Image (tube, rainbow, N blue to C red; front, top):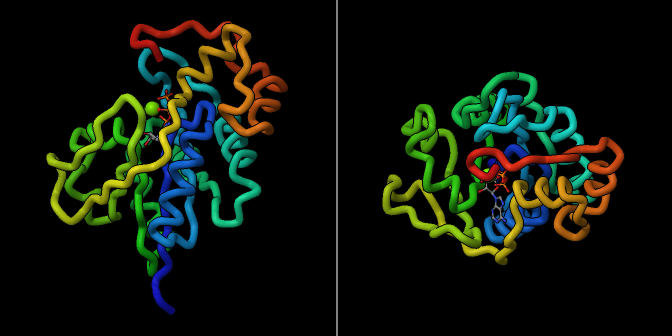
Length: 203
Ligand code: ATP
Ligand code: MG
């Protein structure tokens, strides 16, 4: 059997929004991926000076958002490992889970800029092919990255961020149509992001 092509979409997903879903969908179609696995990060104690929503809530929102797409799935590897997530651990675990398959790690332009600062950066490129996608407000380039290991893809511009969604929800403004309907309802049901205050870095 020929190897399957597996996309990996890592993120905090606090909350998951249509920018994540459009990026994953367009890369899936462009690269003929058999599956895209969304991997919510473990529970860091803080990210940019703010408390991150509980892993189980972020996991369930990601499941709700992806459930209707037959080629999307959600992995608990980073949540179950616990603590700070390093992409090298994510990819090692998924490589063990899909030993015969090709992994394609999907990342937005902002995250791609940072990649060489990630733990075990050299090893990352042996574990997966990287796909950088455009994101409004960021410049997408691979000049700093090893040649042949990264593809750049233009996706439909979605000027949506989780930070923006949290801030809107915190001010009592709607997040309808920025995130899937089921995620809006989950945010209300669990009273997430109530009274959200921007952190020192705006996150
Ligand atoms: P936050 O504002 O909390 O950082 P975020 O919107 O950046 O949230 P993340 O969970 O940090 O979402 O992002 C996960 C991955 O999705 C990253 O690779 C990021 O670059 C990418 N991404 C997020 N939003 C978009 C978007 N609107 N368009 C393209 N890629 C995106
Ligand atoms: Mg982000």
